[in-house]
Length: 304
Image 1 (cartoon, rainbow, N blue to C red):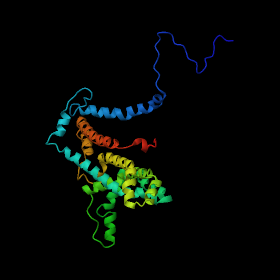
Image 2 (image 1 turned 60 degrees about the horizontal axis):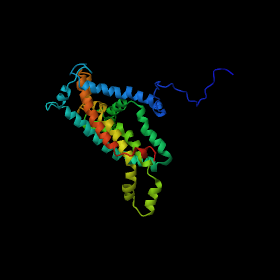
Image 3 (image 1 turned 45 degrees about the vertical axis):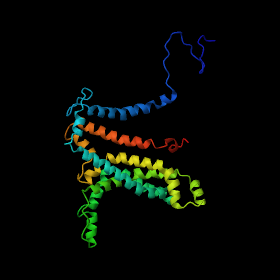
Image 4 (image 1 turned 60 degrees about the vertical axis):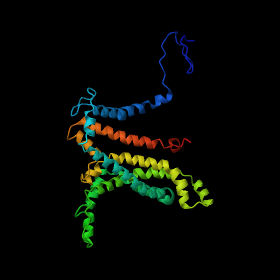
């Protein structure tokens, strides 16, 4: 027999007394390590950089080398009108969420309960616009509502006076946001409605509950996690919207994201833009955490 003995796979290798033993990471952490590194490099690092720039000297690139609150002092200065942009962004995002909840709920109910074998086709029709650039779709609406455009030309062709002057107004900005973010509200609500047990609804109906009572006491509470997720996702996206105000609104209003863009580009004041971005992130993330605290993620993910 050879003097070198084969070591069994489950054999324990003896460790000399006093020798240092390298710590071994748990299997779950080792498997999650690539994802953690990706999130750190692609998500955490940019946020840390933006936060660092927010405390840098105004109109400089002294990131990580200076610390000042001058950028935040400029923002809270009563003479600064940037809070109007914050108000426009948050108000438009809130109104968009409310309108989309009203519009998307009946469609989601149809996808889950009414359309039957046509649900896939209807769902595809709502997904298909996402394959086209948002700017292309918005410019399509500009051509539709533009003077001597599609709508105006058609109305004149049938003998009417022409289309209404609706372009480049705050209302068109809101219309664009509702149009663009409809799928992001629709499908979470559809998921929430799909989580409502049919047997529970049938039992309530057999016990004499009317349609309104079933909706109020059973369907709406059980579907609320999906509804809240749709509202949260839509609000976060709508609060950062800028293309709708530029293309359809004609900059009749200035959202906060456009102020941030101006600070980073034309003004070349990265610290001020970063401070605006930090304040927006704090507001949106605070609202998001408040909503997430009301969600039962284990139930949504099917863990119980």
